[in-house]
Length: 128
Image (cartoon, rainbow, N blue to C red; front, side, top):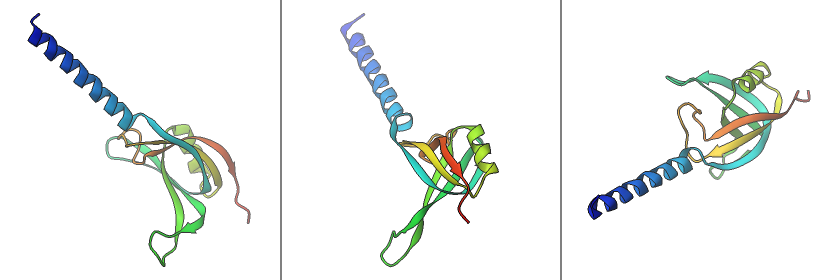
């Protein structure tokens, strides 16, 4: 093997490793984890090719994106597990505490949101 071919091979390997590292960071690295609590608004299964479960949680309190306006705190998320999604669909309107993972970008088969719910911590009826 000549020196030029060795250098080219080494550069090609470094470029491939760098691309793999960038893809991992952008799509699979868990950027953050946490718990959100609120009233479950809806859970739906949607998508053109990859059918994923998507949901929305209405949190207590209000926030303002612009001065002089009020808006509910909403947490939109994707659901990682079919069993979790079906349990939530059957109990819409209840108060939930959900554990989620935050990714840097979305993947079509993971859902439309960077927030992916992976477990239900608690579920209870809202006080009347």
